[in-house]
Image (cartoon, rainbow, N blue to C red; front, side, top):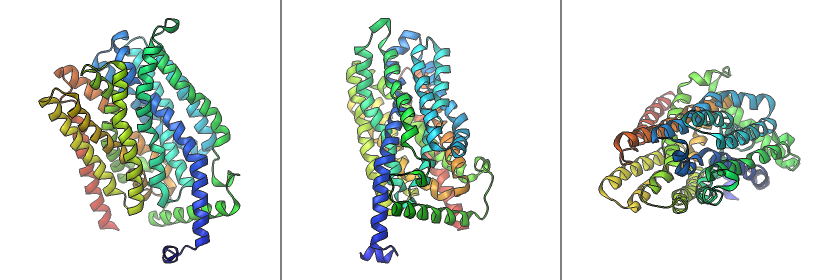
Length: 443
């Protein structure tokens, strides 16, 4: 009661808001997290396919890293146009289109026959998936007040490490169990089986994703009024700070967008570098395909827990930037430790411990990072801004896998492959701190 009085919020308003957020979580966030689970699984399962696919179709480490990274070139090219389309035709229809397209594109990965077809297929999957994650972040601004955003973005993004955690043993088992069925390799069946749910979820999105709170029949009238008023006040506050409503393309040249994009790059270089290569690194220590799948799930399971706890901590503290940078510093520390573990120990345990710390770092920043983006960017161009940040950041998804593959082929070892990942993380932290100082001077 005292807290509500101090913040100018009545008990009735607080109760309405809590009911509204529970309904939104149950009706939207859980469904979107399930969609992201399938999206992320279709994105990283190529790392498990590599355990047998690379030999079958003749991929070197460099060719696999290059082809795997081409996914993110497609991601970069189509992220901003996709969010513009979402705002024009509505989230319900556009999300459905995206899911059906990436489902069929991911199934097409079963047809690759060599380095060229592998690279082209990954590029197409990247184009198809490009709009989903930034589209959901934009969609959150239509539904979730800012004080709840880091926690719920963290809950949604939790599907990423959970997909890798559960997908690791699932993918490895499918590869072994389905190998030879109807004359197809296990990795081909894996792509088909794990992509099919995306098509089904895309069809379901037509009925389950209202465009705005005004279209949600499952919200009570008082909940809808509370939510729309709350979000309207936030948009007006952000617009008052920006003074003008710039054209949609201006965020592409905005310094804050570029800095936030670089900050996100520091995370994605590590995220996708490890997602695509960790299974191969683990198997190089003499593990079987099944053992590799189960061991790969450990770092991502702990990262999932870290995302929930750190997002909630960021919301509780009401602070975003330092929570984000702390995660990147943890990742850089873990990656640095992995170099020493690989150089001075022949065992798998030190490598697993150091890479687990790095994985927790790069995933736990998602909640506070996207909440930071909503604070730095004006509402008028948030859609294009989020997509631009996601597109710039996901170029790191190209750099990470390709750099690891190239260094592995050059040195014959995984020991030094994390150096580019460390460099990007440190650079991202440094540039963000400089920009923060400039912003503080102009407030």
